[in-house]
Length: 156
Image (cartoon, rainbow, N blue to C red; front, side):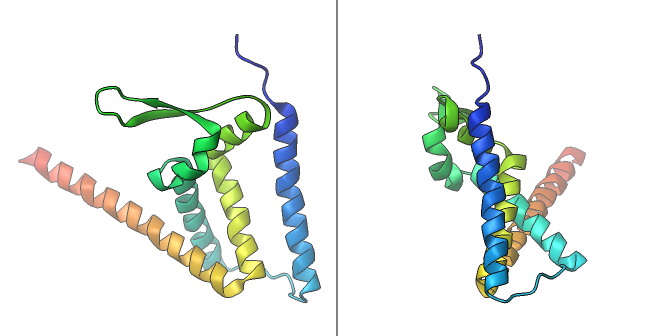
């Protein structure tokens, strides 16, 4: 029988997210930086950067250092490679495991982090956001190129 969802931990995570954004808004005000609306281009870049960061955190090998304390890894016995990661433990550990293995969930936190860097360290935030967005563009171009090559091979 599956264990009960860790609702208390979910509440703590949501409270941390909202509280962190509140602190950043207060710091923005204390620093005298007026709130501003982003342009459609800035939103598109933020979306691409958030996509890339979320994929890196929840799916890529480089993100395994973040996921490792919170997941159980099923390894393919033939090749010794991980095939699936599932949230581990109970309570907060399980809730964080669910967060870091879900691209949509990690994406929300990644967006908050990117916006925070843009507020507190605008130059760094812009460089980070645009670098991640370029990485996302690269991912799509690589996938498109691979699909075109596979299609060309199929037509031979």
